[in-house]
Image (cartoon, rainbow over all chains, first blue to last red; front, side):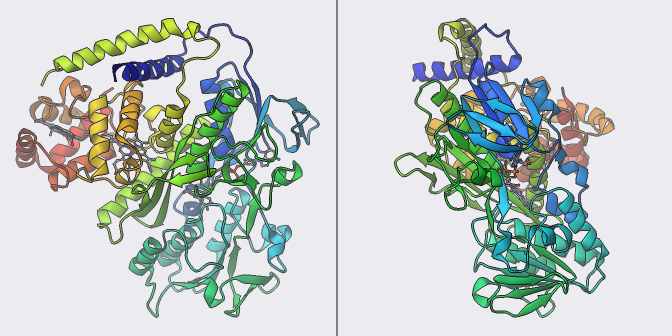
Length: 431
Length: 206
Ligand SMILES: Cc1cc2nc3c(=O)[nH]c(=O)nc-3n(C[C@H](O)[C@H](O)[C@H](O)COP(=O)(O)OP(=O)(O)OC[C@H]3O[C@@H](n4cnc5c(N)ncnc54)[C@H](O)[C@@H]3O)c2cc1C
């Protein structure tokens, strides 16, 4: 008992000393790690790598000089938040000794241990971490394409100019118009996200365009936090009555979308007919970010990894984390990506030093906001099971916010959601 | 309330081990003593609580620098819902007694930092200072900085403390008898506004 506690004190104390910036003792150079992608997964990895191994040479390659968070972007669509609060830069990370390069990575060579970029650079590494996020399967829907997604029927599922453009479309829509949202099949980034979006657009309509309607076409029969969203829609938007602002058409009712026609703004469903929208938001089926395919890391739509170290099972030496990896039972979320990145960093350091990687315990929590003072969450804690290569939810823990909670609890969760947003930005980017 | 003998011993231990760690670091070779399994576990808290347990957001409480006993007590009472929570019950139930103790000692070893809280009204804080001295300081000593058995109020998030007070007043969170009496006295003399001023004051303490 005493020994363990003393040891823990030791560990805690030395971590604190590291933070206080004690003069570092001269050491042999640490591992060279190149990280591709500066989203929640890659940026967390870069910062925590530097924290635990100050002697590591950490290079982050990110295509864009500014990152725009998807999380809280639904509030921007509703006019409840300014776009610039979604944006973060990389200067704080540079100040921590991380080399940040803005370029697009075109190849990762695991044998030569190099990363090549569009700008013509070749970067050498001992280990590489790849966190490119997601890409869309445009061709899963007839008539849809990257061009259509960029001009008329937006996705806004990677935040940035698309977020601003969709906000514009919603603002220009006349009262009495129809907003059609197409929700994708599993698995996809942020399982509660489409339903939060529908809720917040409804909240905007209720205040500014109360005669408008929302059609939610779904490939699925159930969705994340369904009970809580349904409760919110009933309480706030008349769901279940003749006068409901929101109509949800499930997969078994034919809600899956097969075809679109941008010239008439029409969406064709598998079994529920055609729908014309004044604003149409297609969230397409998803797969790992393009680099996962170009670099030969993907296995099907996603990258299969050791879920303890996030090392790619097919390509040793390359760790793939965040949305691009298949990390069930964890959902694809910023919180998951942040938690996983810390395990991946420990894995990278252990493997670079020929040590046994730790068996990580991770967590996810996703807040959703369904209207004014109406927040709720889903949370889970996971233990890595190396025999099954599974992230196993701890029984008895986790779950969603209680049904029919007191309004003051829903209000608190909205406030905590905003607080989470500020805190995770700081944990990920140091801003 | 004074720092107990036990508290003093703990402090002594902490100082001693800091010395040891500094001395031991070079002997451990080319890497500092990092317990990665524990770091990852603590990392599953910081996307909500902020890096090192210190948040910049307005509400999620800071959890570093808390006395390990108080920290573990909060986690255990979240687990069985004797302490009300929006989300912590669901999180805390994912950790064993032993893991809670490790986390408690880990976060105790990190400093409770006090980033600026823009929502604080300095005029209210000024009035709250006297109220705090009269109604709270007997337990929340050293301007709320000493957290043993009571939690740290100095520089804690204003919104979190407001929720805690609501929970105490509505009977969702247990109060000891003397605490309940002080709450009643403050309420009788100054109403909710008295609490609000007191909390603005505690949140403003650097
Ligand atoms: C509307 C919406 C709401 C959401 N809300 C929440 C929420 O409330 N909570 C939550 O936890 N999660 C939420 N999410 C999910 C969250 O945004 C994602 O899970 C998270 O962004 C995944 O992080 P990532 O680092 O894996 O990928 P990304 O965030 O996509 O980051 C990938 C980065 O890699 C860069 N990149 C890609 N390819 C290359 C290349 N070849 N070279 C260089 N750079 C490259 C990209 O520019 C990008 O910056 C939401 C998502 C959406 C769409």
